[in-house]
Length: 153
Image 1 (cartoon, rainbow, N blue to C red):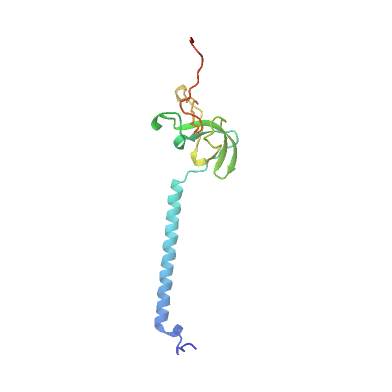
Image 2 (cartoon, one colour):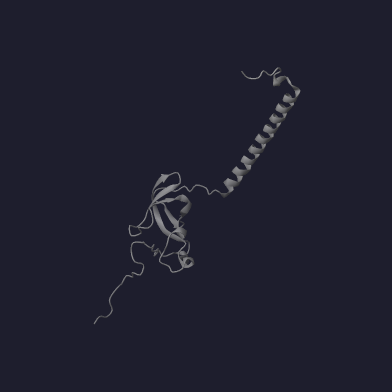
């Protein structure tokens, strides 16, 4: 039904030369890919943070970049929230933290890239007040607490 080609192409010298060229190109491409993989792995490892080795009960700060606080300007707000205690390691890169129940806008399970290890302050000036208040979108933002009534009519 099909056409009969008299001579097979494997025996022709042009085919052998072509196959040799293709093999050489393939070997060059494989070497280039291996070299690029090594370079990419090296670059990735320089940017990758090392895994933090935290245990249950250790204290950590939470990066406050993605959380709204009650400060009027973002640059004046605190850079870290906490410190919070680690309850347990949920997965390879996530921890469950013991966060106060009044902070409803922060989920207790946080990725390790947002955690900063807590170091005890060496000097009194380094103490940071833990008066961080995260805005809860369900409550009004203009609410203030009154300590005592000084005078009434």
